[in-house]
Image (tube, rainbow, N blue to C red; front, side, top):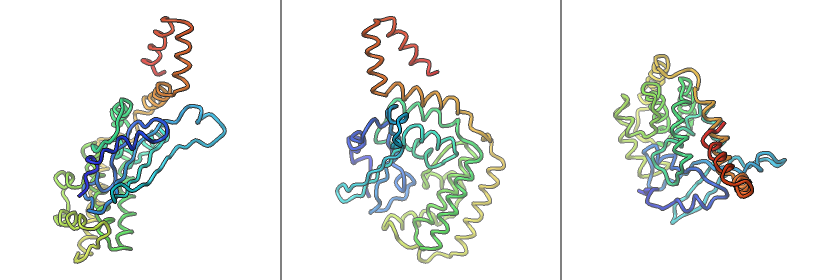
Length: 281
């Protein structure tokens, strides 16, 4: 089994155009059921220069790259910071799982700060995301009969339930099996999935599996109804300030302009700039 953290991927990530604030492993490796032939999904955030955002050309808000490394398919997708934060505020569970992934291959101070702000976007409505994702994967399972979408179905439901109950985003299925009551056959399915990325769910009692999925949907509904998570995100203002201050702090044109001002006007301006950095307003 491939361990992405043994592949020294930081140099690949930082070779991307512009500044990358973080990149982490997502997909089956994050979810705890990779196959021997699973590709490695990397997700993260890049920072566009301010000039790219205010000009006439459409900014490259999403960048993607695919390549092969020692026979393993690699996939790197990053969003510009503003787009990523907007997705966080739209109750998107995917980006939260990427941000909070423990499988980090590249990080920065801005990454750590964004992680600290993540609890402020969690709401009861995130249950809708996991409910919808589970339904999509279940339909795919019914169409293909593969283990992968079946495991994705159960993983999404258990992540949603755990989030509603604890306020914690936990994407790792084997860990979730110790936190939430789940069908006893899931460890066997995880072991079977390890042998082949697109293996079939042979020998399963489909009616039982459907009943188990329906039961978890009902548990998710009940957990949402009883959750202590708020109905609305509380971190909008803090995230807005973070996006502005981070872009100003790292933008090369802004830094060059600041340096020129300091050289012209001396230490008083340098102190003012430090105060500006401390107060993102």
